[in-house]
Image (cartoon, rainbow, N blue to C red; front, side):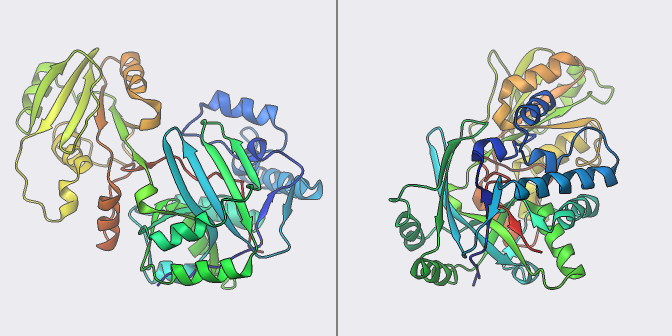
Length: 396
């Protein structure tokens, strides 16, 4: 049983939403982000990532100052009525319809809200410091829930009205938000979600850890903001890898060892996997397809995930990358950048090798979370994502 609550959201008031929201650093280069901040004086990037290379204390002061200035000038304004916020995101031929609400930290601690990634202490504390500085959660925690027709119909009942916000974001995704105060709708959505057994965190694990950390220091802060979407509409893209070198091996030796577990075939085009147990590889201006043909005896089903086949049988065993999360020889490239981004990285450093990976499936994410396991780092790239700064939660 999942509990949700309406809340008093703080949202754009005398400013266009598309100029206020914070573009994702995964979509834009550092140069583009700096240009975005320069061209939009009022912007949440100045709060999430304050100007320049200031010391930490000065950065927090800068962030707080800009946030307070936005409120003082009515650039953003806190609602005076409790709302659920119906949220639709469209990217090309994909549409997902969900909502923003509050959820309970206790539900996370009771494993009703389930994680699939490891939460690292340092990143958690950084997020917590940022949030406590403002007493505000700027970005929602993106969660998925099992799709139910009655919940979808309930959300659709509000979308026949004009949305409060309707705009195209930096990545060409279309965002629409309906701000709903109807007490009957609020009651019905709360009741419908009580029939859902679990939420699954898609994106925002360290925000979740941060809110739990804040709650331990200040027990009255026992809620956090979520953006909830049905699992059949939560889209996952590939998360690819570039390795700096072949660990001293020649190309021929590397491919020979790799061939013990993978069928390696040269390709005359960029190779994007189309099914599980299939990978692409790019090295010295040549693409290859890799098909897993080896045998493994997994201790857990998680060992059979594509990313762990690559981690265990190639990165660790052949390339000597023991810690895939922290080794400086590995780079993670989000699939939204395409295979050309892999080619560019490898062409800049001829010793390097890139791998394209078939996307994880939401059923795998749910199975991992249900079994209290964690997926390897950078296994999932959920896109499109809810925006930071469209609605923020001031928890005081």
